[in-house]
Length: 292
Image 1: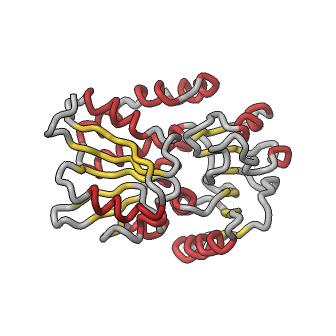
Image 2: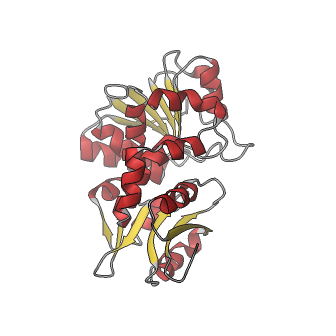
Image 3: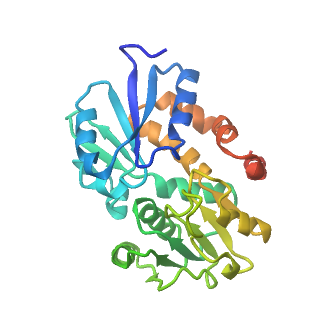
């Protein structure tokens, strides 16, 4: 029951319909006796800063999670950034500290590599093609660089954005990072879609699937339309695949700890099957069984 004492978290995106974080938070809060709720909000980029500042002016606002396309813009709104958020130049979680300042953190990259580790998808020492250069892609690139991949190729139609990300990762980690002229995946051992391609059924494929190397591992971080056409094509060829659900599930305890909801974080960390049962479609249940 929502009362006048209920703490409120917000999930902010544009579009909002693909987000799944509110389902996880609102499932977990009652199980650990936390009087809290998460509310999804569709907010356009031009209204992001005003929305963030207005919501955090309320004492009952406990925190905010951000998704497409707000993660990079949010980095310039908050007062303080964690080291990880600075490297990625992206924020997907905001809280208010005791001094009233807004602090930003980015958990996408850690959630992603934790997901790869859970499903024993090898990335250390591998060549990676990363499609996209936005907030989530930036965080994933940083996490993969820290996880000792051999090289990263970046492809984004916005070549200036891809170039800026490549320079940042090379400077921070000394890792070979190239800006690709095309989305041809044939030379890469790990292929990751970290772009919005696939949110709409009319979207083109992130990569030409007939050019995937036979031993490639294919990941798609989208929270909608899973398994995506990219993953379906890879599954048809017997390739290991990874959807975005587990990336969200494994960063959810990190969100909750960041917000001070430690009971909820501990509950999910001990057993996140409630989230996996809720999010994974039937076609991808084998992944869940392997990780159980």
